[in-house]
Image 1 (tube, one colour):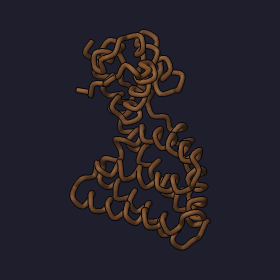
Image 2 (cartoon, helix red, strand yellow):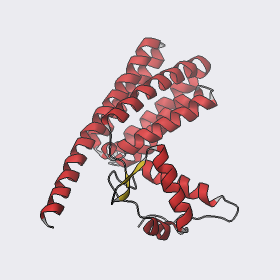
Image 3 (cartoon, rainbow, N blue to C red):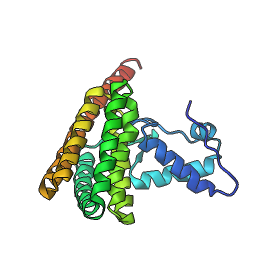
Length: 236
């Protein structure tokens, strides 16, 4: 049962419903190919159908969902091209963030990244692989925040959220988590050396591994979706 959305009178209902649904999609609460029904969503979150309808329309414009003939709104499936584009853009943004953060707060950057990695390893060692999702977010947020640029931080956050929509399931696998932590260690090591080229290579290598994990999961998911559709057709 998805959690109910609490809307206070002082809130703009349309904005709140849109933000809530968007976050649910980006967090993987609504899966790729899942159909979205106005009535059902309205009942789940405790809002009327009008703001839900408007939110779905805006989410379609944003490219997170699509409206299919005779089907209605569905969450868009994973696109190889879109994942590749996000990873490429994230690489450019995060390399710049790491450079600025190193220039403005190098010691603090190294200290916070070390703490993050230590906590990540401790959580995974306790078998709490899912806790790594938040720690992974924090690792990249540390770099973006210490860049000192609000615009860069917001852009990095937006790109990471879009990537998380694809990565949310693949990152639950323990081997993927270990690979991600090793990627974080590589970034930290390059920052400690003060080698800009190595930092760039480490960030891009880390994102490339994330892309591979996402696409591996996406391939498996598409196979399952195709198989499910085939079974459904054979039973009709």
